[in-house]
Image (cartoon, rainbow, N blue to C red; front, top):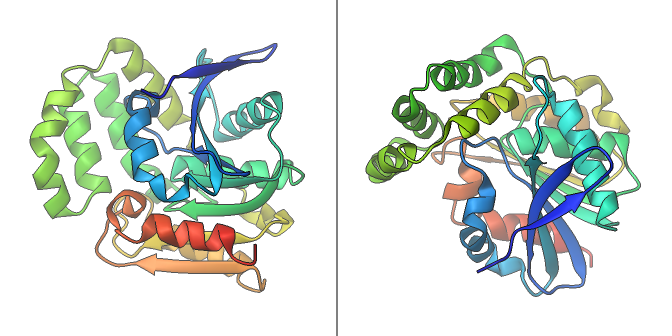
Length: 268
């Protein structure tokens, strides 16, 4: 069992876990979820087993004590502070969905921390259309409709075949969701509304890989292409688009982790 540890600052505490034994440091910032990724530490480490010899990886949660309003910019500020508190530098940061928004903001605000960055199914600019799925999830959480939330969440992030395969699992897991977890989810989902760093993407100094999927039912493929349009003038920018793997292509595409590792290790 991978232990869950806590980093503490003067203002907040934040859970994280780490795995791998490599000389490089990777920081993984997960997307929004109803139940914390801290509950799945061993599964995450197993999924990224390809990285264990090259990287020591830190998976960082959102802060424990959420204020009533907590924007993505706030999340990035706190995550960067946690990274500094842990003494991490020259990090290879990977962010998925909302985690990608956090990663981009850290790369913009704290370029000294980030050596390379990989982004998955994310957006630099949350439009009303892109917020629609998050708004729907938030409203289900506010109603306390745990099963409805889990089913709609799974339906939008996974391809139909994957959703049907795990539908019963989603229903059973929804029964374990607490009121506190629903309240956290509402705050985190609300914090995505209005996020926009599109005009600051060119401030990013590190090499960037961004991936998306043409069938993204959460943020739409246009979100990935907007990032590409801002950065594709750079020789150290890479774009890859998947077909048929859904918003969570970072979980469903069989070559995804190797693609990220190849990018991180290229030239080293």
